[in-house]
Amino acid sequence: MNLAIKPLNADILVVDDMPANLRLLVNLLRDCGYKVRAVTDGNSSLEIASAAPPDLILLDILMPGLDGYEVCQKLKANPQTRDIPVIFLSALSEGLDKSRAFQVGAADYITKPFQVEEVLARVANQLTQRSLQKTLQEQTELLQQQNQQFQAEIAERKLLEEKLLVAEQKMRAVFEAMSDIVIAINIQECQLGDLEILPTNLAISYHPDMDLVSPTIEQLFQHETAPDWLSKVHEALESRQTVHFDYCLEIDNKKVWLAAALSPFRDDSVILVARDISDRKEAEEALRIAEDRYHSIVENAIDGIFQSTPAGRYLSVNPALAKMYGYASPQELMESVHNIALQVYVDPNRRQQFIAEIEANHAVSGFESRIYRKDGSTIWISETARGVRDSTGKLLYCEGIVSDITERVLVQEALNYQQKRTEELLLSILPQPIAERLQFGESPIADHFDEVTVLFADLVGFTEFSASKAPAELVQFLNQIFSAFDQLAEKHGLEKIKTIGDAYMVAGGLPVPRHDSAEAVAFMALDMQAALASFNAKNAAKFQLRIGIHLGPVIAGVIGMSKFIYDLWGDTVNTASRMESSGLPGKIQVSAATCERLTEKFEFEKRGTIAVKGKGEMLTHWLLGKR
Image (cartoon, rainbow, N blue to C red):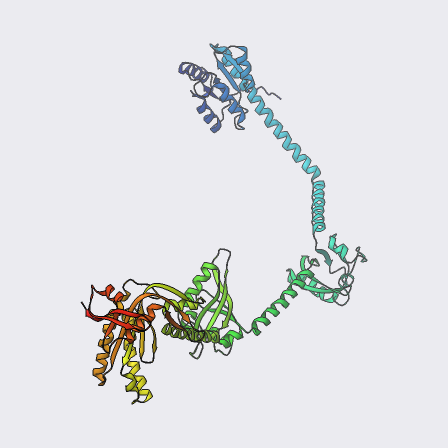
């Protein structure tokens, strides 16, 4: 065979950054009949060589950017260009330079300035070697193809046998790794007949005493169940489709459940795959029992149980909830109520608040609302529920328990009403700050005040008047007068202390201290006279007031265990009482201390010194009016 093939139309890539050298080489090679491409830098040479690989590359070493060594390394690292021979052309003539060139993969090295004959000879040599290499490679590939074809023809039957053997081994490995029973059944070979049990772990351990060479359906599946299995085999063969079914066997007085599949694979044969699902059946039975118990609990629960959509429809309710809402059955309740917010809640906003709390906290507890029953009557309920969401967190529905708390609410309302009445009664007896302190459990209550103004008033002539009046009429008259005084006390911010018969006591500066208590009491005294005059005019009466006022320190507190009274003690109280008792009808007598405090805003008349019981001689004044 002649392998000396002249490389015609060879493709050569010349890489040199010197235009003069590049033109010389290109013209020289083209004159010899070669196809020549030229570039002036390393990067361009790599791109051209990868896109359209040449037969030979003439490569300069000293170039800007990538030098010739780097270009050659990259060419040899690329599977597309690594077989292209590279001839270095360089002015570098040192041995180390040439050695490095061959280390990076150069095929030859030409030193500049070069001889034309040397370049052409070396190029022709490399192209010839390249052509011979390609020819040898093609011949080798052709011989290999022929040899492979010849070997394939010779070993085809053996190869098929090996493939079948491997396939069988793989199938048997799969069967051995399975935990299922796998059985091949040929219907022609057995009258309830012979089976081929494939070697699976479960099949072997299923019946340890069974003859595994040629067992029958009766041996494997018991005499009483064998006809059923054979019927399923015929069904699979006739339909040509896989038949799935569950079956129960009695083994050692224990029920064993199998999930079986019969698949036809020939006209007369099927593959049976059976899996022991006894554990699953036991779990399903336990689940069924649990669900029955759950439904029994739901159906017989005293409290209402529900599931509802966020939009306001009931998904399920139990009989207790239907009865609570006045419906004959859960079905009637779910069919009748299409909008829970409008049809159930008295306040439609409660449903929105219910859903909002579920969204925010995932649950609600003790959510109390007033709701309508079917007949329009209302009851109070308490709901405890949670939200059920999908994997994305979207609220699917709410489920919870409803309790009828109407009786509790009514009792609570009655207690609240009674408590309110009690508080009102307490406030009518005691000042508000004192009542609050009593409610918080403070006891005893006793306070000292540095300055309190005390007023005593006595209704002159009422004793004689009462002798001629019926009790009801007498009380009515006295109530009108003292009620007017009570209004005046409230108007001036004073505290009514008590009434004793036809006497009236009021104080200023307690239980909250105030600097103008004397002024407020003086105004009230004048208003009391005006109020009594108005009463006399309307009722043709001739009552007069004898009023006394004094200021000073007092002790104030609550006395009594069941009937509370807020009272005052001290010399100030006694002096105020003496100012009233030693006064004159229609007059307001004040002590010297009181007069001194009020002299800038009120007019007084000096009465002089009088004998006061228990006090001796005292200087007093008559309060005449506002200055």
